[in-house]
Length: 219
Ligand code: DX5
Ligand code: ZN
Image (tube, rainbow, N blue to C red; front, side, top):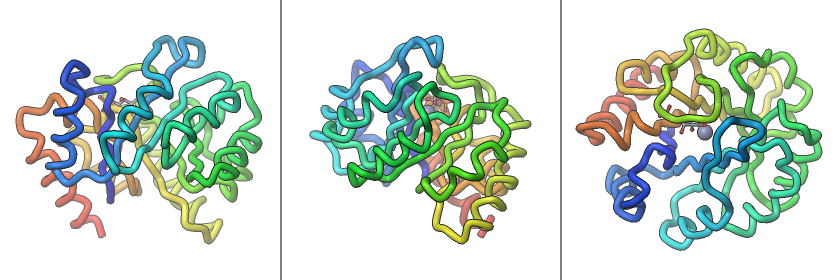
């Protein structure tokens, strides 16, 4: 199991220290939320932010595009040094085309679904994915409460992934904290995105230790 530290939850005034903290904690993935003010009612960082992080760390950069038109930005994020780009199934661009464009740049391709989206609707796209990202809150903001109905989608997707016979990671994003991480992992997540639950925790070391411990028990 992998924890992907969501930088949206970090203290942006001390970004370098926050990244250093994730490294000290032994975290190999950073989750970078990109928002366009259309697909979600919020605006966040752009490709320059991803490039700045690329220059500062060799951690795996897990870029989550909450954009209506991801196709026009794939090259910019690839040039910025993303390792994986996830697009949304609900965006305006054709998801198959966007996933192919990500892979054509030699990156891992992820497909994300919002809380109201039925997992069945992405079955045909699974062969084009290296990762499926299940939103466990409405996308747009950090610090929200985990939606139990979304956790219930994880075993469904796990089974759909197994049926493809392919090596596709399952990532859960939103509202994951020390108190509920065990449930998310037991439901089948390989990657748990944690933002405020990590960066704003009193004892982040304990969060990592206990979440990783819960994952080891779930094996
Ligand atoms: C929400 C983002 C999440 C967010 C998670 O739209 O996709 O990645 O940063 O933050 P927490 O862990 O605080 O819910
Ligand atoms: Zn995210």
